[in-house]
Image (cartoon, rainbow, N blue to C red):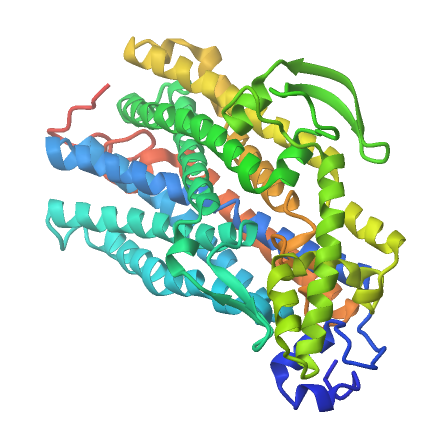
Length: 561
């Protein structure tokens, strides 16, 4: 919708930035027109981005973790000169390369959606959100993309130490890429270092360092990469366990297993510790998400108990059949015995007040745009500006935000609470799988240091069947992080339903179907290649030293079993 179609050309002066605001339903003085909120369109936009993000995130964790494991294997090769560690580096590096290539392919198409499906989001917050993504592309992506080529092609052209440096820079680039993407995502969760400008009608960065050092972003980064390291460890352990069950390439398998077990133990403990830190950050800056994943409808007497199991009722805002651990939630979320974990009912009441403040900010902003920039109006706006996003929640129900009814305010306040049931159970699936993997890794580490792991077929079989577990945990964790932020595209700043583009429902259905088909095709390719090369094992290196190679063991090579 253009400014002219909104009847506001005289107010915007043809300024496309102000026209975009009008297109989202902000009326000019005397204008009653507004773009309508199409719930089907919003749902399809969200489904498309969620689907592509979840597909992409199938590749990311393995890339993050396997890059460092390959570096560790090559480091042992450089220090000891044992050829078996070079073979381990090349074999697991091959699987890393397959995963990396498909991860890049699925990731590139995601960024185009900000312009195609979320144009108003890009307009409103692009000055802030675009900065870390630009740095990721210019620094991290080019770093990893350049050196991964040298990793595969430089074995005969670089010295041992030079090639090790290449491997290190490849891993560093992959993890730097995750850092900047999670800085951008962390800002979506907790938009620090920025402020809304009534002159440009968009968010502007006020402190780059606040954006980078955002506590939510930092906690998300270390928690996410640690989860990726666990994924890689379980992947290598599972495949190595399969080789041991088949009694083939035992030296290669046991050494790979040992590296993965040590790496995995450190990583899974980090995930648990950093998950606790993430809970503390939620209690500080994302109280709605914390209360939702715990189904804390009412504020409990501190310290609040942690609910292991329960049956949330979103409609009645009650929880039945509870099994709880006393004090635990209070200790995790507040680090104290006397601080409350605020319940959803109390949060809704607070949000009602913020919505009313947002109505004042919205009214003052309309006056400023209409030319009334008096000190009183400017003071009203600046004083209530932090709650402008809450005022925008009313656009789902009225075009005249400043004149919203009590019923509309109450409904908007109810919208600030995401659906609790899927968050409650998804979080427990993630935590439960995390502790299952902790148990498997601890047992594997114990039997590895006792040199009896190959004699524990029950554990090896469990590890083979457990290969998918870290992916399930990562996907569920990502769902909790993003779904728990709703109804916000940018936390407490921009509602999701206002962030979309002006496409048709038919265009979205077509593109969603196309993406699903394309991404499923890529996932099938990934699984086929991974299974193919994993089944063949190190014989794919064609060294003549491993099971299934026609040449047989080469002279002078002692299999390390």
